[in-house]
Image (cartoon, rainbow, N blue to C red):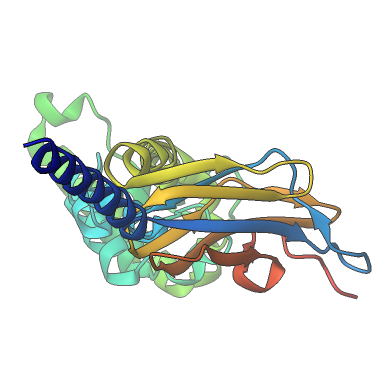
Length: 284
């Protein structure tokens, strides 16, 4: 009986040892070294810098976050902007978002001046006050619009006909009209939408990476070295999550794919060669 218990004990010990060995062979590790070479300098270790081991590439994570914060397309934005339908249609047709751009006046025709209310008002402001000789002056009065509508309509129609002929005869008077379009220019609002979107993505992407796709993380030591243990064998990305590691004129970001296998540690060197430079040096 004693021999039976002894044999059973040896069997259990052997099973336990086998489980420990199997667990060890099922895990993998990463041996990381990060160095940056500034222009004209020698490689320098990236000290005390956090590196993240992800199960998905960081650019793909950014795309995922962007997809969750959909911004309007250009046409959708223009369709909802506070402007006349004529101006919205003109901006779509001419692929213009900034009405104050210096070359906008070259795109505006006499027909546009007469057909787009915002252009008409800007043209009048740009050329009135004695700036442009010969500019037709309205003979109607706004009070006649209700008091004497027939008279108002006749004089108003005559004014528009004379003004149209003047603009067609003097197309150079359209020059500078963009200076009067700041009040209806949607560019600032359009830029703000995109800036807010970029800021939101920049805030959410690192959180998404760490909550959904983080396998491990480790901080480099003073020699730029870090070890990540306990990984399941497979494919990963070693990422700086969009943060810059700097040395001299270099500002590097990493998102490097790596395959780790059980057994010996997988070595990965992070350097200028497998990084993106956020601030590329200016060469003469």
